[in-house]
Length: 472
Ligand SMILES: [Ca+2]
Ligand SMILES: [Ca+2]
Ligand SMILES: [Ca+2]
Ligand SMILES: [Ca+2]
Image 1 (cartoon, rainbow, N blue to C red):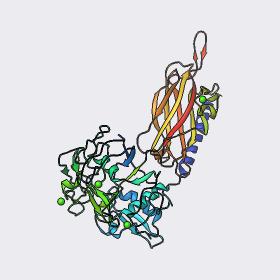
Image 2 (image 1 turned 90 degrees about the vertical axis):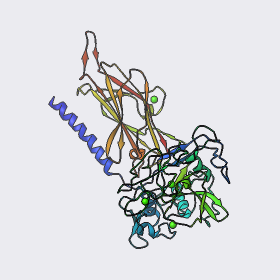
Image 3 (image 1 turned 30 degrees about the vertical axis):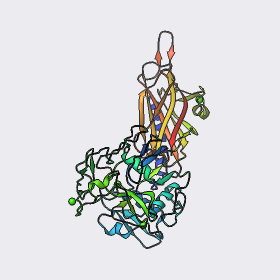
Image 4 (image 1 turned 180 degrees about the vertical axis):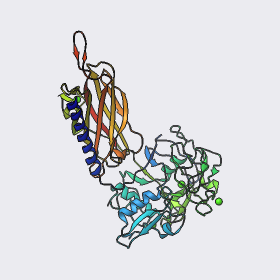
C-alpha cells in the first residue's frame, strides 16, 4: 500500500507540474470581446416613420448588447494610438468628469487607462470617424490591426460604405432600429415606440455613487438628467445596469449615449438614434431621427457595433494523454472520428487504481471565440455499481481546470454536449490558441470485484468523437 500511495502521489505531482507550466506560459493580452444579441426574423416589414420605413432587415445579424465601453475603447487606444495621429483620443475624455479615459506619457509612447468607476460606462467624445476606425480594427483582428480600411476605407466621413463581406460594422439605421424597436414576433411590422419593449414613457434612471442605475426595472432609461453622480446633474451610467431590454436583448439603445449609425442624411450628416442621459423622454422613441457632422465628438455621443453571425468551426483533438489508467486500444484518430472506433481505457491491474482519467488537446481557430461547445461520446462497460463522469476544460485565466459537466456515465453510447456559461475566451490560451479538456471517471466501488464465477473489472470506458465547436 505504501508503494501504491507513492505512485499516486507521483502522478498527481506530474499533473500539477503540467498545470503550472500551462498557466505560467500564458501571455496576457487585452482583447476586446462583446456580448452579442442575435437579431433574427429576416425579411420583417419596416415601419413607416417619416422618412422611413425603418427596421426592415433581410438577414440575421448580431448587435452588441451594450454600447462600446471606455474599457473596450481604451484597449483599442493602447493597441493603436501610442502616437495618436488620427485623433482617436479626445482630451475631454480625461478632463471632463463624464469622460472615462486618461492618457499619459509622451506622444509616441502614449498609454491609456480608464478612470475609477468609468471602465464600464459608454465611451463618449467619439466621432463617426472614431467609430469607423474602431470597427476596422476589429475586422483586422485587433492588436496591430489596420484602422484605415477593412470595413470602411476612411474618406471624408460621408463617402465611406461598408465593404461587402465585413464581419464587424457600425449598424445601418435599419439594423439599429430593428434591434431597438421591433417586437421580435416573426417577420411582422410590429414595433414598440421605446427600445425597452414598451409604448409607455420609460422611468428616468437614478444612479448610485458608482454610476450604477439605482432604480433598475423593465422600463427604465438613463435620460432627462436623472442619473446624478460624481457631482454632476445627469451623467453616463454603467452599461446594462437599467436592466431594461429591447425584445432582442439589447441594453441602453435608449439613452445613456447617442449611437452613431451609417445613415447619410442631407449629404452632410451621419445618423444618430436613441437619445442620451440628458435628453427628454420622447427623444428615445422610434420616431426620432437625429444627425450630426461625422466629425462631431460630444459628451453624449457614442456608438455600438454589430456583426455577421459567424459560421462555427469544428475543432478535433490533436493529442491526448492518459493520466490515470491504461490504454487498451485506440489513439487520436479514434477520438477524432465518429466511426465507432474507440479509445478504450482500463484501470491498471497492478496498482489497484480504480479511477480513469485522460486529457485531450486541441487548437482553436479563434483566440476570442464568442461561443464554445464541447462534445464527446462515451460509454462505460464491465461496470458494477455506478460511475461518475466529470468533464473539465482548462481555464487559462485561473490556471486551473474548471468543471463544466458531471453526470453518471451511460452503459450505452451517449453524446454529451456542454456549452459552458460565461465568456468562452477563458478556455483558449492567448498566444497559442491551445485548448484542453480533462475527462475523469470515478467508480463507487474500490477496485476489483469477485463473484462466484467471475472476476470483474469495476468498469472499462470507451471514448469516441471528441470535438469542440468554436464560434468566432
Ligand atoms: Ca476622435
Ligand atoms: Ca438631475
Ligand atoms: Ca444609447
Ligand atoms: Ca472514433
